[in-house]
Length: 443
Image 1 (cartoon, rainbow, N blue to C red):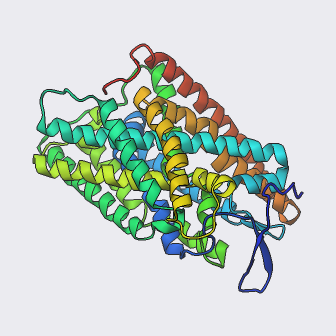
Image 2 (image 1 turned 180 degrees about the horizontal axis):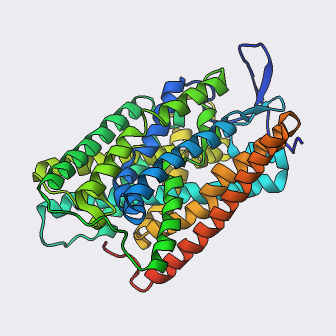
Image 3 (image 1 turned 180 degrees about the vertical axis):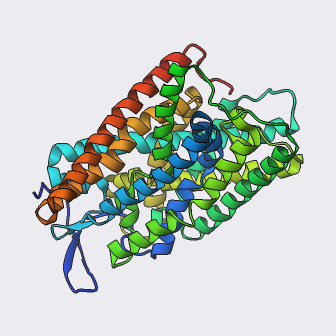
């Protein structure tokens, strides 16, 4: 069952509370430094990012009240279960698998290592690109509040957002270094979520009866419903659980489960409030960026959009950290301070280049919603559900009953079918909407 060791160089050895030696692959980033609560805030920073401002429009509108509520609750339960399986595989075979691709490689071999890394890279790259688009939209929303000339278009604001994201990336050497920034991220999330909910609630009280019917023809409803399922998966899952778990102190499995419970209880409440109140207030006309739908004092909306912009800068760093860790470990390792000339200049050059590509794609294709659905179908579904269930089945097969094995195989089959269906739906949506697309669009 053990695959090849893909990391070169010496390994670090960590001794846990049971005095068992567990090998840890070499890495330029910190391992076992963070509490479960810090990991919990990393997870909740992701689900309550500015993406949450779009769930009223991208989840509730295509699914309606019943489908949206049931879908969000069901997706939460399934996601918690799948992530729990993955968390329990963090230490197997006498090794601590601090990267998703390491775990897959250990279980299946070299081809699975490469495939998993490719899926994860596409997933995280698209998420990062989406964050830069969101940051640009937030900046543009502020500009529109104070200017009627519309001289500056969305691509300009995306470029500004990418530059700020790069500056932040230069100053935060690794995921564990976020620490106080996670608290800042939480405050910023609460600012724009509370403002969005309060202003939406006020609009909803004053508004006439809303239309909550699912828009579109019968055929289009089928495809948008399937596409919304991919958005449900995207809302809860990072696609980088082993990388987050790598930062957690021992006992690593127990602490990661605490972080997951925190994410799926307290952590989801703000997201639910935003999705439900926004949809209640505006019905099927809800914007995919909720702050574009609300009415209220200009200064209040300005604060909300600035908070969304700043939180997005922090959240992007979380989802970019696996790529940063790979580059830092393989090419940029140097002894001494993280802010030595060598280390800082390396981050400026490499992370600056990576985010430049992200920013260019964001400006070129600012209508990334359809492509996000495709990303959820071809990478988030396999990484979070198919692979997690099959890896657990492979590792624990001698300890599982026939019923338990059948359950995991059923999960693999069902989610493989859902992944295929969601990919088809996303491709259809891209084909239909491509008639109105143009590069560097001002949306």
